[in-house]
Length: 501
Ligand code: KIV
Ligand code: ZN
Image 1 (spheres, rainbow, N blue to C red):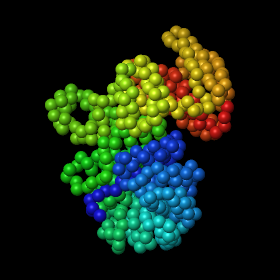
Image 2: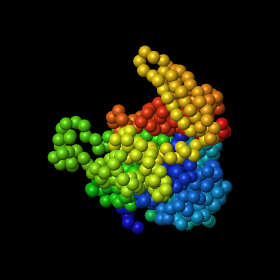
Image 3: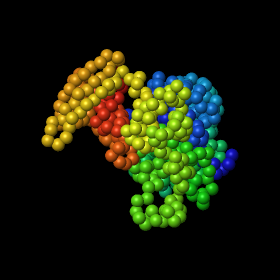
């Protein structure tokens, strides 16, 4: 084993997918898993099979869809969880069970009403049980960040003896300082008998904005696997971002580490995850934010034009950004469209591509230049065709000094409905007209309109959170007309309701 190889364990489809509103269906998960495989991740954590039939099914489907990455399934230190994970992993070529238990005194007392000795025994028993079925068992010591180092070392030593070949040291609450987290990993390397038989893994959360720094501190002190997600998605403030670790290791030639990540795929992976999870990437996000390579000050622009390395530590091409080829227009042909879609990871059979090309031309007529985000939005709109409730038409009159009025037409499972309403603005009028047809109590809790790039001809993206019947639904819409995008986001929420109209 190369001692400087850092294994990338991606948990976008498990820890990342736990975020409310970011849930993916199985088809979407397979799309992400295939992209993760192309990206070169070593391990894909595909789900927590005992948690729901959907997660169980996704682990099965992902196992069949990808070839070389190890497929990992999460469990608690409970035999039933392990049995279900074993069943879900049956088609995986390389499989791993990720089992564990809370080890901090807080978890031991309040979650388990137990004591350190009993928790240690449960940890060992779970690893031994999982080893009966699979060769690779990873153990996680939940809340290791706040676990006493001496006790943590005893647990780690015991689970390695029981057969764990990877030991995960999660900073579950994102509390540790980088020095503290690095020292914890060093302590384990120096005090655990048999540590050479296992790989230590980092798993850092970003509650205090230190996930990446802590992960790097872990690697610098001997960890050789890191658990990460695309765009840093994950519970609360998220997990360590894959792209940040991959690019730190690639850019710092002074560090001896290597990963297997094909960094040229980073940009498309980021966009795919952002669009499938309806989770916009903040503009100034390191590596993948839309401003990450935008130099606006005159001094910087001047320097970059003379010699890019004056202000750029990463060549945008290294993460797959190729500005010269992202513009399509109404004069672009089928081949250019197909090529661009494929670069974005969107594959379409020829018949679908022909139909899509017509939509693309309509759109290009309106917007002149079609960029990658527009294409993703257009491709996403394809799925809307299968929806139960569809927007047929929307007409809105609004402006200064007049009352906004909207008339709307809906297609509900093939039946046509129409209504009109006025409101205190165009969106209010349109949503009221829609609610005249869909007579349910729905309260908009969150509503954000985001433009994709710049310019008044741009596509607006709308993210919406609607409460209905005690549940929260997340909807997304995108259109050059922001009122239409808002109504589409509202309809997207309606289509997610359990019951049909
Ligand atoms: O943050 C955490 O502790 C986890 C474990 C379940 C690995 O996600
Ligand atoms: Zn986590």
